[in-house]
Length: 213
Ligand code: PRP
Ligand code: ZN
Ligand code: MG
Image (spheres, rainbow, N blue to C red):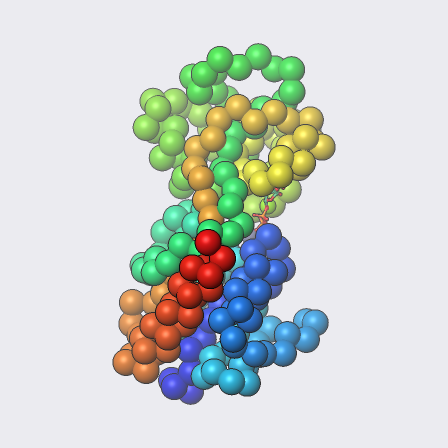
C-alpha cells in the first residue's frame, strides 16, 4: 500500500477536468467511472482519490493522500502544513470583493464598519488588517454571492473566474485581494518510494508543460 502514490483531485468543480487531463497527459491511465471516489492507475503505481477541494490540504497534511492538486486559494486559506511543489498554470482565478452594482465605491476604506460574506475568512481577514479596515466577516461555505440580496451582508469576497456569477447576482467586482492558480501540494512525510514516484510525476508534468510552451 505504501508503494503507491495517492493523488487527491477535486471530485467536481473548476479544477476537476484539467487535473485529470494533466494526469492523463503524463501517460498515466486510469478508469474514472462516474461516482467513483477512488481509482487505481493501470500503468503507474498510483491511486487517484476524488475529494472535495477544501478537504484536500488536510488529507495531504495527514498523509492520507501523498499529493494533491488544489487551487492556491484553498491551500493558503486552509493553512495546512504541506509543501507546494509545483505551480500548474490552470484554473486561474482571483479572490475578489464584490458589492451591489450601482453602490459607489472609491477605496477599500468604504468597507469600514460593513459586513462581508466569504468562504475565505483567513485571506480576507489578512487583507483587511493589512489595509487597516475593520469590517465584520460572515463565514459561509457556499453560494456566497447571494448574501447581499438577502440582507446577510453588504459585500462578498469570493472566487471570480469568468465573472458570470457576480454578474448574474447583481454584483460588481471592486477589489482583487489574491490571484490564484492550481498548484500541486505534497505531504511532508513521504517515504523514499513515494518521493521517487512524485519526482517521476513532476518530471513528466514539466515535460508536458514544456511541450505546450
Ligand atoms: C467559485 C465561486 C463562484 C464561481 C465563480 O466557486 O464560489 O461560485 O467559482 O466563477 P465565475 O466567475 O466563472 O462565475 P469554486 O469553483 O471555487 O467552487 P467551490 O467554492 O464550490 O469549491
Ligand atoms: Zn470548494
Ligand atoms: Mg464557490
